[in-house]
Image (tube, helix red, strand yellow):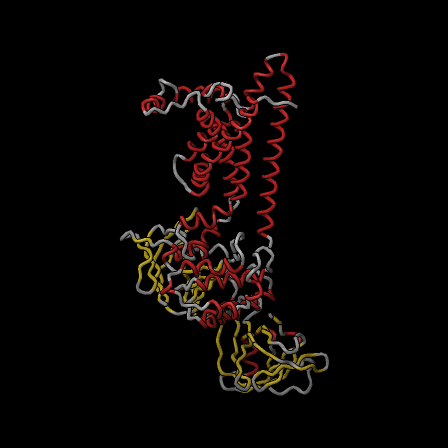
Length: 228
Length: 351
């Protein structure tokens, strides 16, 4: 197994992008899941469709839309350019691409966790003097922790594998925006680098296994804490 | 405690309409499942918003559709004990107990946690998680948690119906002693007449979303004697029996009662159906029933086609039930003396 310095950079970049995307998406994912589970409003179905859209759309399509939005001529891109913060073809674009593609997975898991909470527990906390925000942080948040962990791991893993949207908005620049899948793609396209591709594939497998292990261990710990 | 409720609430095809002034500290709400008891509780606690009307607790308006007042549940200081304990699964017993206490303003705290923990015998449970407590322990924690929030009113929404019979009557003394000790008025919701008799002083009968009548639990039990499967249920709290020929001999006032079921050195609650008491005009020489007592008729009441005979057995009260023709034959009138026979096996031990 051999890794070039570019490969190492790609690995770190992948981890950085996946971690940033997950961390950024988490509060929004929690808020959206809360809205969908506990609130009734008219546009709920529209919100649900919108949230789940990236799950069914080809990532390339999402990448293309993001390019239109964030690119030089996109309305958001113009705003960013004017403020001297170009995003396109930087690692930040890869974060946005990953966050968009992984978001539905995150929301879905948190939502499942929240839906399992007995509404009377929330009623009990309210009648014991907790305001809705107090109840949100002391009852809903800890009780949906398992869903949050599941969603975060799923999203983190999905971000590591993100290819289609990333290559469109962030490009494939070694050392700058080249993540593990993009590097593997490069290696796989040249006939002599089969071994190099395989090395990176092994790294991918190892990272995925570690993520799954962490998820299992955290989940078990949560269960044990409740059964003292 | 004074509660003024005038509200309407539609939930699907169900319609709750209540217009009632209630005052007292031990209020019962009696009715079958689906009659609107829980909807009423949720409206009082602020967990459901009525479509229309007003709710006043003492001098404070909790809800008014006219003036737009709707105090949120956390500011009403009304605690609820639900049918299921609803303990927070991620918190220890101690953190559950103090959840409301910690959120109660210091100047409003009226309960000494140590006294309550003692009273409910929760000390050995404090450090444990809530998932592996027994059903009765869980409900005791839930009760303690509700009380520690120092509520102005405690709503108990069928707090015993998820427990088995033995446990149910073990919890009742806790429920009433805790609210008495700390002077917390309560509203006790149940479909069990026995629980109403044990827990409340006055009962609202809720049927199909409407309050049908307001009565004392005694009045309610008498009215329902003819319809009820077990007639009128006499409740006897007896203690410290001695063994006698395979039976338990209990003291009941200045009388002795022989009962087939019992437990030494323990207090027990017995139920005796009005239909299991046989009346005699004269002293029968020998009968198989183990309890033969002389008593005075102090009151007669009608319930459907039956006659309820309220008897005084040297100061203790019992209600027997007979058909009208029997009353005529035995010439039972207020003040007459009669004998009653009760089989030792007729007493049903509740706890």
